[in-house]
Length: 175
Ligand code: FE
Image (cartoon, rainbow, N blue to C red; front, side, top):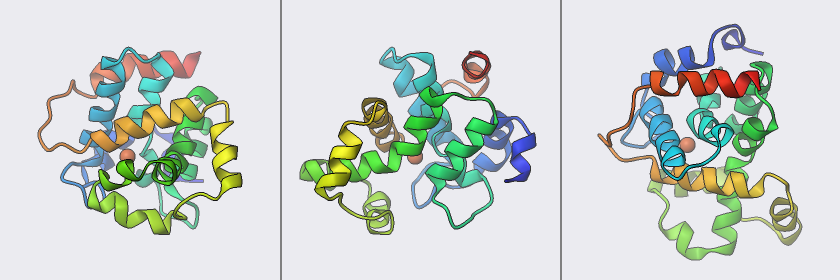
């Protein structure tokens, strides 16, 4: 599906992740590190920390007709990650749509770039879609990931280096 399927997932962050993250004041890699650091600080299980780190890897792959969360989840499955990683990644945009639907306050606190993309991502959920998300076995992990994602846009916020998470990534992938 992409040339990146043959290289290490962290290498993608090391190289291509240095680009600005879609209208936000951080790079993709800073964003990833901040999200993973927040998940780890809350004592989340390793797969969710890794999902937070890798949730936007789809942005680093070749653009295509499919949304970045689906490209990312598929890529991570090819890399050997299981559903505890791939599902929260695949659902992190649906989680945003869900939260915007049920919580107007959430919506008003989104970054302006994130509010702008909501429409393109399908907007608010109808009742059926809302129910489908709420009953999905990985919805609570996806919601947690979404909160880390939303908060991970702080210029200059201190985080460990990528290498800090490398062992965790290998551990989770081998599980
Ligand atoms: Fe993100």
